[in-house]
Length: 226
Ligand code: SF4
Image (tube, rainbow, N blue to C red; front, side):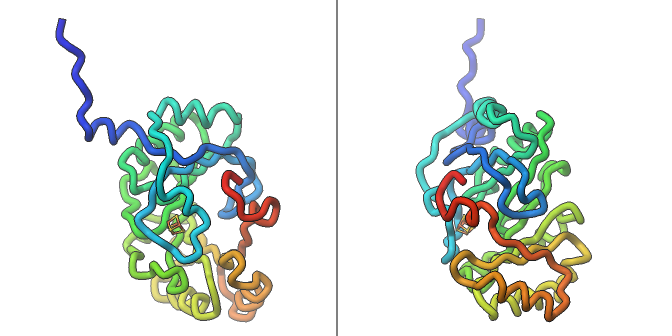
């Protein structure tokens, strides 16, 4: 009888992921805001945004195979699942995880930074791309080619730190005709830009964008696992 073959490192990396947390909360942003949602937070991110609220996900985490992650999600009985990070696409097995979650019948979204390619993602997944503004400190990492892989169900999010960020984002809307491609979300960076100020700017300029504040932070504050 032949010996069972040992998986190669590449095979192992394609079937398991480093996970910081799996938790149940209300979706705090994007177009499913308010829905009970299970969040799968993958460990690691190659970016270092000034306002990052998930630095605890940069390191550590626990290796889990896809079956264990699916079981972790299933225990909450929710309809919506969001795969987030860190930067989830930095891990090779993120794409197979997204497909398995879709196959299991969940409504799946992916939160990603706009700094990595978003091709070859299961078409059933709603992509929420967080394009980086100058105020983030990571604007040079943006890959504007991600827009080629976005559709009206997807969302491009701008987290804005100040008026300069707002004007930069407003210019990008025109430069790439973004509202014709996907939904656009404008959100104030928590604790940096007064939400009402941003709302007034959007209305004054008649922008075709959706204003958002992070619901989970209004409810529970800036704490992990919420
Ligand atoms: S991309 Fe997201 S997780 Fe990574 S540093 Fe920026 S805000 Fe934090």
